Length: 262
Ligand code: DGL
Image 1 (cartoon, rainbow, N blue to C red):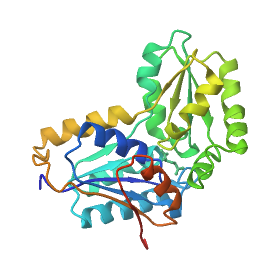
Image 2 (cartoon, rainbow, N blue to C red):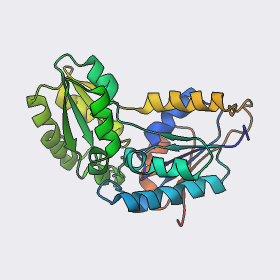
Image 3 (cartoon, rainbow, N blue to C red):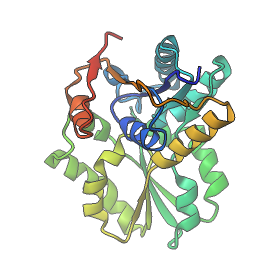
């Protein structure tokens, strides 16, 4: 069981930002990444649909013997993890927008969160803001269109810059000093976002926290892989693998995106 892989899924290629943090912290773990890009973005879909896709992704990872599932998608985490945890025995890790650390550290008592509609409207986000952001204004902004542009490889486009300016400028006017990236696709945009916010605003995502949480749970369940032999990392995608391959190539570790009929 210890040598079985960690299974990670996202609605698309965004969860690669989570894969990357987990791999940095746990380099001896076998991993399977599943990008359900055919159904991305999940953000505007109903809770029932998001649960249906999340179940399908989880079943795929379990068929491939995963010992733990990391839901590397905020939209699926906020909408489907309760359901998954009540139906599957393996540990299920979820991502969560980092509102708590942002609210704790904010000096202007105003933080921004950029996320999908599905995440911003979720009960979990509402509860987190109530619990951890008392006395702090949380300015919510839907990142409409950002996931679709990233999925089609248009990170550096004019269209992307325009959208980011439209979403972030009003938050700057509200005097935010922290910007929470509540979608696992968005860390790919950090260089562009930095150009817009300068150094007055700290950008926070949840990648490192999720990696630490994954390690804690694996240790607790006695599931840490003890060998460093024949480590495999498989990346599956149910749409054209081209954009995912560009990201994998950037690691220069000869990793291949595999197209799947799924
Ligand atoms: N990476 C997903 C997330 O974190 C993208 C959301 C979507 O598919 O709309 O929410």
